[in-house]
Length: 233
Image 1 (cartoon, helix red, strand yellow):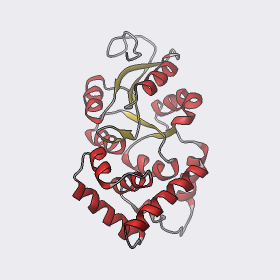
Image 2 (cartoon, rainbow, N blue to C red):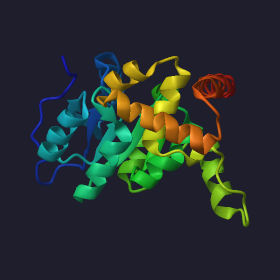
Image 3 (cartoon, rainbow, N blue to C red):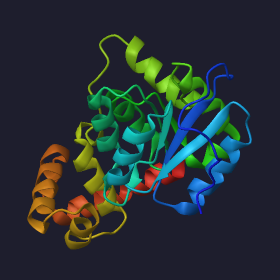
Image 4 (cartoon, rainbow, N blue to C red):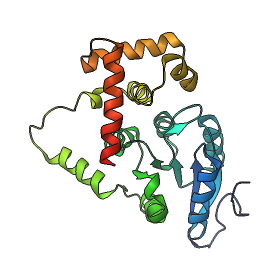
């Protein structure tokens, strides 16, 4: 059962301002844990939950929360697409990403998409409350490492272009990471709700951008990148 308080859909007149939060994550246990942490604070209130992009659209439109806490890996699509869609709708909802995906690859992408911060799930227990409050106040929340990375990119003159992997589109990066997880084209297609032909097209685009000769090189490179990122985390 969702861990929600009994409450009106908007704070009563004259009441202290409460930050209203919606959780978007396809793992019920994760949502429950986050809800417990957030609801322990008197100024924060989890007012809704969603496990998919489709459900998130309905709940965010109905509840109009102050903050949406969004995972990137959702059952029916990628959280980046949800962030772009919500941002494009003009709803005044601040979005905070909470994900296990590689921060170094995704922090720039989520900020460009319209999110206001990035929090790694393995750090959520200690930092979720501060992150939600900061984002609700109109600020950006990033880890020290991510903030330093963004600051360096903005302040460096004549910096080199992005690495080859960073040149991949959001969907190409998603496919690339799945290849690194050992998934084949059919499994990727089923997971992303795409045709096998479309996945093969993405594979060809990735090979071209990374200057790889064949599928075997692509698989080896994707696995190597996954191992390298795991060692850095």
